[in-house]
Image 1 (cartoon, rainbow, N blue to C red):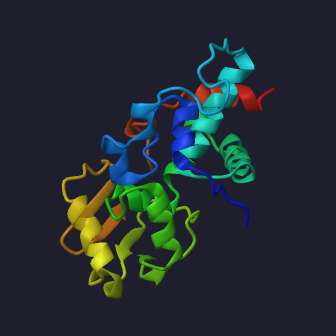
Image 2: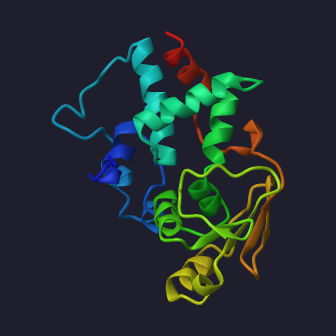
Length: 208
């Protein structure tokens, strides 16, 4: 499977804002966007006037990078969103929020979405009592997500849960922090998603 293997800090610099792809590092003085707030590359510091298409493309790229999905997968999610009842852009964000790796991150079971994706792949979580190792698995309303019993005792998971003990949990999720068990109360609404994404621009891009 294809995946991005370059520096994720370049992604933040390209979008001109923090995408919080490296956990604690993003909140420290080591954050690349804090030291070099211009785009990477030879012409990164040059002034560029963006076209309408350029603005739409950047918004799509930003959303892809926040959630860590590739182009073909993002296009598939857009197709799913367009077939659902409701507003296509909001449907798209709801689908992206429903990914298991994102839910694990939102619950504080990982310090970043990339770490959550790795933990899911290694089988550290269950959904409704069954182990799931597919990061793109889409949770549904009423699903119960939990850290596997064996994983709870690992030094890695204990450190993560300790570091995220004060994390604010979205209202569409319900967490029993002591037992590391959570429930999807409802799917995320647009007002529950705190990312600076203009989904209307993404819809305009795919509507061309």
